[in-house]
Image (cartoon, rainbow, N blue to C red; front, side, top):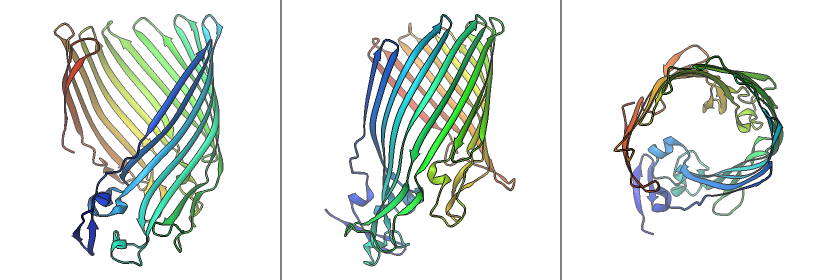
Length: 401
């Protein structure tokens, strides 16, 4: 293979397709099956998904000549589900689900045993090392879902679930790519020991049709996780829907949720300090949507405000995941479709505007965009020759950051 050299700040390194380009094939597959017998349904999923990507943005931009700029991320999933749909009465049903799931998450990359990127090509003392991160998990779950149409104006949804999984051990291992042995000073790093991860949840949601035009929805969910937080998290939600006519309606929705930190963020047993973040990210959002929908036109205008509390991120100086404070975003989304020529031609337009700010633990606020444009808009046409043959002519545009 022909090579050339590229000058950078501390010397020259060889440049070739293997180092610089994404010319490797890492296939992914997904096999899915579903079998139904009377009131029972069995679902099965097996997949292996691989992503070949830069493992840090800084190396992708500042070090385009280094082999250690890319990583392979592979997720091997096996998921089985047995469900039963039971008719308890004429207006009440109970769904029962039993799940079994196994996940094996791998991340592989080449790293330099020294501190200078690419120096393994110039200094024989700098050994190129292949690092593999592995985070296995397997567990079982049980869920009950109750639907009860109490009367014409009242509908109730309730449920409960439990999931128990064995997670870990999560570890990073190193191999000398030249000898296949573990390099000196590169013993396996245990991110967290094997842990029994237990989650419990229960929820209830009530829908009340006050009039033909007004609908009220209210709900509450409680979740508990052990061994992370060992506290219950309450998550309310609600909505008000008013129909001005068959085509025009107005909705207000309030939703809450949470995102628990992964095991390697919660339990970094290899660190000498007292672990990392244990708190979940709490999410709360408000949406007001005006919806118009008739035979030819669909228009949705949605204004939103979302806040994430206790956002966790990686602090390179502390070498740990830390609570980075709060972040909130607000904006507007517009979706429009119009059919022409007796439904043969469809024009569609989408527009989104969003802004974001952060507040750290000291109360300091700042804009946070993360390279995402404030304005995104797209328009296009679709022509339907038949029900199965169509031609799409989309145009995608993004505004300034």
